[in-house]
Image 1: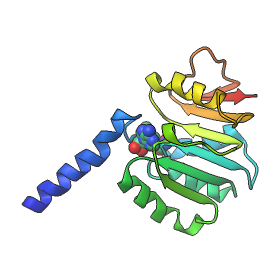
Image 2 (image 1 turned 180 degrees about the vertical axis):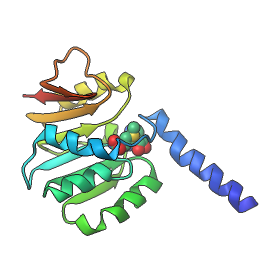
Image 3 (image 1 turned 30 degrees about the vertical axis):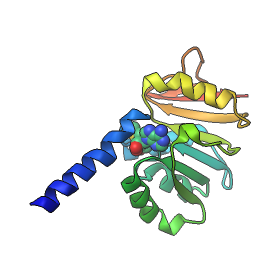
Length: 162
Ligand SMILES: C[S@@+](CC[C@H](N)C(=O)[O-])C[C@H]1O[C@@H](n2cnc3c(N)ncnc32)[C@H](O)[C@@H]1O
């Protein structure tokens, strides 16, 4: 019984503490991951960053297209789960246990996010003040304030940073 309580408390802690830094774990529906990748339109060998990479499902789809990727994820359970899931694509897809707000993001051609509205302005600032531009960003569900998307598809928006 003690073990079960310990597991429950550990799960609550791992999945709960991320809300202090960003969105809680809620995965993009599997059939929408390809919509996001279609919008980003990256070529094989180009680099995609996923901020809050969850269970790694988008990174797996990206790897099937030959796209390189780095996922940043705060929840250690999701990091290990997605590393296992991505094992066969390990030359293309990496997952880092880190808080994306405190990471110097490398130069990449695409970014995918599924955050929460209150974080979108902070994200916009982070990208604008980084050396990442030009870069394409797809956001699921939430908008970058005062920035016009280049494309929209059923809740996904493509933003171009020049
Ligand atoms: C809404 S989920 C989206 C997961 C994945 N991007 C997807 O679309 O399936 C947000 C993810 O971001 C992670 N997260 C939240 N804040 C974070 C932060 N500051 N740094 C890294 N990961 C974070 C959460 O643990 C969660 O897995």
